[in-house]
Amino acid sequence: MESKISQIMGLYFTDWYFPDLRWTDVVEIIIVAFLIYQIMIWIKNTKAWMLLKGILFLAIFILLAAIFKMNTILWIARNSVSVLAIAAIVVFQPELRRALEKLGEKKFLTAIVPIDAGKENERFSQKTLDGITQACFSMGKVKTGALIVVEQAIRLTEYESTGIALDCIVSSQVLINIFEHNTPLHDGAIIVRGNRIVSATCYLPLSDNMGISKELGTRHRAALGMSEVSDALIIVVSEETGYVSVAQGGQLVRNVTPEYLKERLAGIQNKAVENKGISKLWKGRRKHEKKTH
Ligand SMILES: Nc1ncnc2c1ncn2[C@@H]1O[C@H](COP(=O)(O)OP(=O)(O)OP(=O)(O)O)[C@@H](O)[C@H]1O
Figure (tube, rainbow, N blue to C red):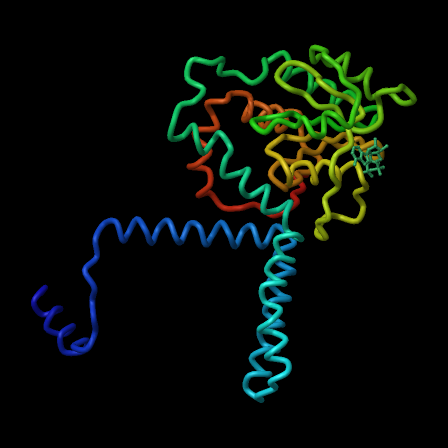
């Protein structure tokens, strides 16, 4: 049977060249495919998609100029390539920074080197997890708006300094009190580091994502924006609807249940979970914005 197959192959593919394939070549192919996939996801989720469309348009234009021998246009194109490359780096500086930060995130490093070995493995306690969940849904019931940033591996010092410094243990009562209308700390976001609230009234970067629903205002846009520039988990309570939403990694999941919120918080509670993160990279990507109900 095998000899028959090789006979047929030999008959039809005599001119074909089959290179020797080593296992390192297979690994190389997998790595390159993975990198291309990640770059494509990055392009899709950032402004780079617009840039890619612009570049394609320019490329077609230049190709036409080359076909019809329009020398002036070709000369301009040749001389502006380096300027355009620098301009793209300047325009995409936040996205590039985020991409590099992601590479340097502990979850990549700790997967290889156990940097945190010996350190406390829990980011925050069950009490903090329960306090945040309880407060969010209590505030949702009475339609009190809230914005809570739960810090992970990336330090949010830059955003922390835009608010009022606090050093306060997380509890549902404290959270409800902070976001109470007409109180000095209710505006903006709070940042939670471990079991403590470290800052209130923080200003977060607004997302310029065009895909976000028009019915969502700046509170949700700020949550999404923060999730695009950091690995934090951001919880929003809508003043308008009372819905609780969660943003992380540039994805906003709207109108979640207490069980879902607890699950998401539990997912980042243990630092050790980060090591499993790499396997998650293979799972399919969700839509940019999700509605659970
Ligand atoms: N960049 C920001 N950083 C932090 N907080 C912000 C930011 N922008 C707006 N907010 C908060 O959001 C509030 C305004 O919310 P707005 O009504 O515009 O948003 P929304 O997404 O429609 O939310 P809601 O459903 O609660 O009305 C502000 O009072 C402020 O507390």
